Image 1 (tube, rainbow, N blue to C red):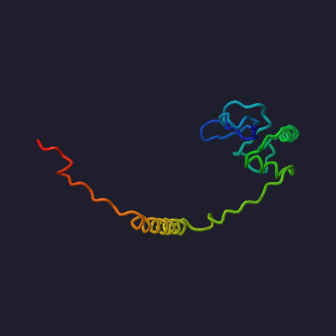
Image 2: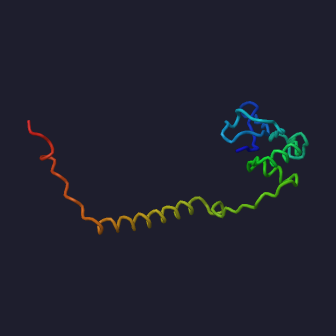
Length: 137
């Protein structure tokens, strides 16, 4: 499958991304088919040099079946080419302590139900004595 995604370039702590069309099995920074533009996140958002993106080539690759990544979908939505579906993750609004408590309560309920059902299904066999298992010298 073809994907339109970003490949990282630049140095340590100075990110710079190339927007490329690649096979989905290729490494992130590895082999690609064609470069469509670049993205420099270090520049201010009002600078035009922050994002350069060949929209005509992108449309052509999407017509051939290339799927854009989430970040590329944002760029396309801002350009008015493709509509990005709205996402809703209500779990992020819950504070971390409350999420942990909820997860632990769910595990305890699931663990209690499984533990309560196991003894009724089959009685446990007595364990062999340690003296019987070890040979005498």
